[in-house]
Length: 161
Image 1: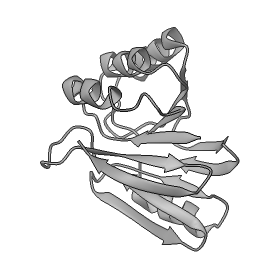
Image 2 (image 1 turned 90 degrees about the horizontal axis):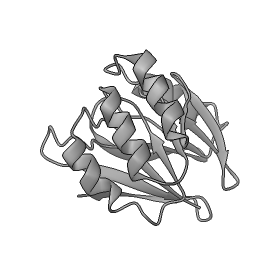
Image 3 (image 1 turned 90 degrees about the vertical axis):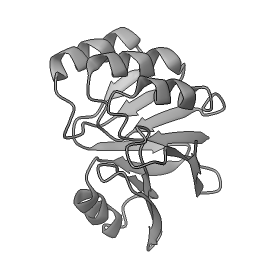
């Protein structure tokens, strides 16, 4: 199973559209917070046909309309501040915040822990756990990036676009 991992769109729907065109071979998407406006969630849900798992970021404001748009999309699951999933035989945790992600990785409960928030591409091992920040879709700091995780091999790559 191939998982597309992305974070911090911050309403850059043009970058999101570019990215979605690259994710057609992914089985599911993991989004790590900071969609910002509800229209961005609508674009995400419309632009990818598979399941999309979303956690809140600190800039996701109109949660009522975000929830409504997720319901309308039909393929978006909102997990609140923490998502815990089993995908392709792997245990996965999602959060927006690095301090929470590090604690989750140190628990040795998960194969993969993903976070966003600081817009910095990072991939390290904490024991058996891969701790991953895919960077930002927005491109505020000059580089737009996302990650792909293969549940069969347990390997990931961060890709600039």
